[in-house]
Image 1 (spheres, rainbow, N blue to C red):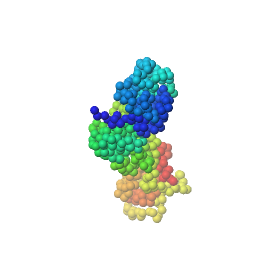
Image 2 (image 1 turned 120 degrees about the horizontal axis):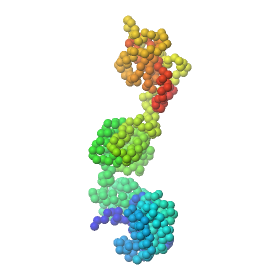
Image 3 (image 1 turned 30 degrees about the vertical axis):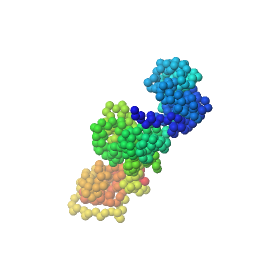
Image 4 (image 1 turned 45 degrees about the vertical axis):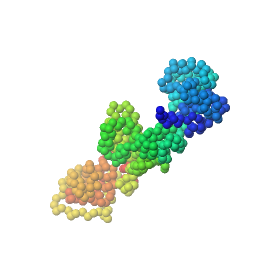
Length: 530
C-alpha cells in the first residue's frame, strides 16, 4: 500500500530531524548519559517535529543498543515499537481523551510495569485540550510517577497549559524550520523518490509550508501526483496560488476609487460561491504583501508567491501609498471581525469595500493621515497653490484682491450705452445688498473661466458701496480670487451684467465665522493664508 511522503520519510533518529539541533543534541546527550527526565513538554507550531522527537526519544530510552543517544532501529525493541507489536509506548490524543476518567485510567495503568521495555512511555499529544479536572488529576502522577514511567507532552498552544503542569516538565521549544533546511530536505527526498524537483520549486514549497516540514512533504506529494517533473507552475497550481487575478482587479479598482466595479467583482465572486470571510482574509493578505513591498528592500523572502505575481505586486504597490495600504488593512480587519456575527455577510463585505473606495468615509487615524498626505501631494503638484500672506489689512474692510494691480488687469470691454443694472443701483451706502445678477455672472464664467466656475458652484454675492463681495464656502476660493486672471474674469463678467466697475472682495459674515469646519478644511484654509 502506498504511504504518503511525510509518513514514509518520518525521521527515525535524532540526526534525521531537520532544523531542531538545539533540541535533538540535548535529548541525545540525556539518553547517552542515562539522565532521561520523568516528564518532557514539547511546544511549537505544527509540523516542526514534536511528535517525531517524542517517538524517537521513547525508542532511544528503551533501545537495547543505543548509538550516541540515538535508537539503533535494529534491535527487537526498536522494531517492535515501529511495527506496533510492543505496546509499552502509548500515544494518547488529548482532544478525544480529555476527561477526568481518561486520566484516572492512565494513572491506574501506569502502576503496572512494562512487559518488553525498560520504561512505559506516555506520549500525550495536544495536551492543552485536557479539561481542568483532567489536569488536576494528572498533577500528582506527573510530579512523582513510578520509576518505570515517562511522560512526553506535546502541544501547539502552550499558553493554555496551567503553570502547575509547566513547572513539572522539562520544556523544549521547537522553532519553525527555515526555508533553506526545508528545501534541502525536499531535494533529498525527491532524489530518493525519483522526482525531478527544480530548485526554484523547492524554495517555493518551503516558503508555502511556513516552517512546517510535514506541510512541505505533503505539497511535494501532491505535486508528484500531477507530474514527475515539479516546476514552480506545478507548485503554484497544486498549492492554490494560481487564479488570484480577482484580488489584483479588486485592489486596482479600489486604488482608482471605483466602487461600482468593485461591487460588480464582489457580486460575481458571491455568485460563484466564494465565501465572504475567505475573500476578506485573502484581501488582508494581499494588502499585507503590498505593505511588505513598500517597506522592505528584499520582499521575496517574506512573501509567498511566484516571481510573476511578485512583479504584479510591485507594480500595484507603486500606484498607492503606505498610508492607504494600512488604512485598508485596518478596515478589512474590522470587517473580518464583524463578518463572524453578521446576518448578511455579502452586505457587510460590500459596505467595507465601499469604504475602501471612498477614503473620506473612514474616520480612523490611518485614513486621516492618508488624506493629509494626499493634500500634501496636491500642494507639491501645484493643484493647490499657497497664496501670499496679506499684511496690514484692516479687519473691518473687505479684502481687496491683488487683481487690482494695473499690470495684471485685463482691459474691460466698453460700457453699454444706456442704463445700469437695478442690482447695482445702491452703491453709495455701506449696507450689504444681495446681488441678484450673480447667476448671469456665473453663466458668463462658464464660457470664460470654467475652473473658477467649479470653485464658485454654490456661491452668492453682495454689493457694499463700490465693492462686490463674493460669499463662497469652498476653502480654496480665497487663493483663486487673488490670482489676476481669475479676478479679472469675474470683473469682466460683472461689468457685462451691470455696466459698472466693482472692486472685488470676500464676504465674511459673523455666522460663517462661528461654523466649525472639517479639520482638513481648516488645514487648507491655514495653508492658503500663509
